[in-house]
Amino acid sequence: MEEQPKQSIAVPIAIVIAGAMIAAAVYFIYASPSTPSEDFNLRTEDVKVKPVTADDHIIGNPTAKIVIIEYSDTECPYCKDFHVTMHRIVDEYGADGRVAWVYRHLPIAELHSKAPKEAEAAECVASLGGNTAFWEFLDKVYEITPSNNGLDHSLLPGIAVEAGVDRAKFEQCLSSGQFTARITQAVDDGFAAGAQGTPHSVFVVKGQYIPVEGAQPYGAMRSNVEAILAQLAGQSVVPVTGQ
Image 1: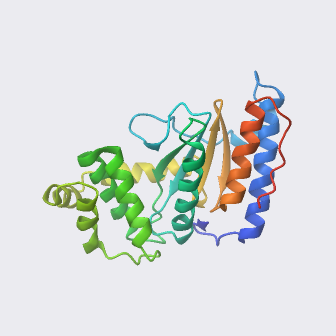
Image 2: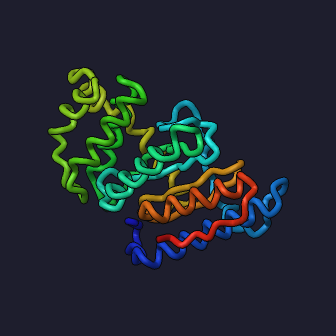
């Protein structure tokens, strides 16, 4: 995870912490389904996660049992890896409505000066081509960027065209700054939601929010999903190992 201004936590430690947080949150959510646990609320009382709306970019059903909201930066190398992980998760759990993935921009300009413009570019594509075009554009950006400000922005129009968007309209949108304010607001929303760096994820389950920091590997994310689904099915708690 890339933080601002602190250095990222070592990955093995982050995995253990995330697993423990998920396990604790799962217990407190389902130990008393009708009333949120006070302990759980203590961890989330300052977190303000905006509800998922039609303006969000989503893969899967918005009413899925688990909605994972990711706050991400296209030039963050950890986000690049986590993007692949999240695709694996929704490929496995999204088709039958168990998991949905919401992507929200959190470009940290102090670390990656190119990231805000890339986020604006993605919004231009969405405005011109819709949700499918947005995801095709985003996937390609994550695929080809070397990360850490390494993406050549002269490639952006070509990526937009590959996503099915008219080049001239895309270039006009991007140069106009049409979505600059939206991205600025998205950054504010990301930090208000508890992000201390990128990627930052929030599991939304039965109206409760479970934060997960960093680029958790596929095995850890899958364990977290399985633990929550087991509780929803009325089964015993599944240990979350983070492996």
